[in-house]
Length: 453
Image 1: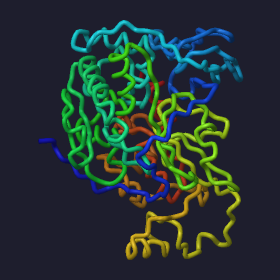
Image 2 (image 1 turned 90 degrees about the vertical axis):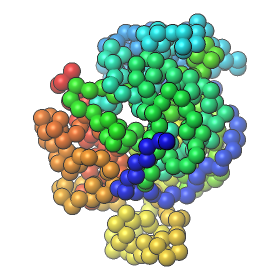
Image 3 (image 1 turned 120 degrees about the vertical axis):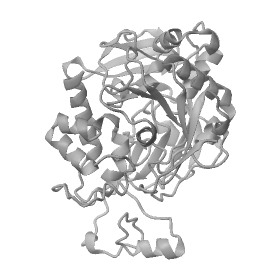
Image 4 (image 1 turned 30 degrees about the horizontal axis):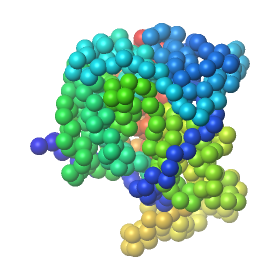
């Protein structure tokens, strides 16, 4: 019987626009882009030029620090441009997709017939290693450093997140193959976190299954690591998103790099929230065309509204994103003494608005949201508000202070090795001081990595 861990701290934010469990079709833009900045912590060395013909799985660039770490094209077609910015920084590589997608073929065997090193080499060569991340630092895992554990979360508790069971149900064989490959490569069983109930993941083999019950961020892999196998100095833990495991499974079943993803298009500004099939790097505009409200300025987010990346209207999908969220920008909304208004349609984590009464008495869930910060940055307040939404055995207020001041010794002692920006997204949401906590954590982890590695 699977172990059950209940978390009480956290917050479920009620947002309208959840996707219906129906795939509306396949939408892929004619031009796709691979953006090096989406792969945090790497320095790219481009190996293609304008006019080159590539296949899905053809390397476009590699990481200068680890040359075996390839980054590949998601489609076949012609390279339109290698776009560079200041000091010749690579901004993006754009590819004109052809009608018939052709693939680089990889000679693969069953996972059981391969050694861990052979699996690792195959993932590096095929470009799928980039989906294996590590704690500490929340970056692409260093393939030369073995992990003490591997974690996969089989559910996402973030607002409007896709239902992993629905997405994976038709590809359980590839999911199991991905688990087997991870376990063989790492030499340890995979820790698989699931939500309560008899889910399809309860029968997964070669994994230690733990059930996590509680509000968001119970589905975050960082929370699960903290409860089961905390990361200390010198430790390395690998993490892989459950939906990214399908890419690895397909590599062994098909011998190709198939980056097709079933993605949720959600949010209160989406006319018909739905699931669509698309590809990593596709432009976002065709995915939203004719399916967003008119007459308002939108904030398009690759990922959930708490920790996702903003995408411009002419931008491209983050390769790690599993959903696209659309909310109002809110710039044109100017309220007279807004902070003092009773607010019947605004969600309040502190339950100070009248909407809290409506929520408690009538179960109201349809609140209005936009992208405004609703306040200015000010001094950090030691109020304990972060502890209420972060179910980790750390002292977040003290950790954030150490990060702001750049005190690496205190950051190490206070739990910086196992935290990632997404884990503090709720802290940022409820923060009275309006501090950009995810940015603070990201910059601090980068500084730690630079100083300690």
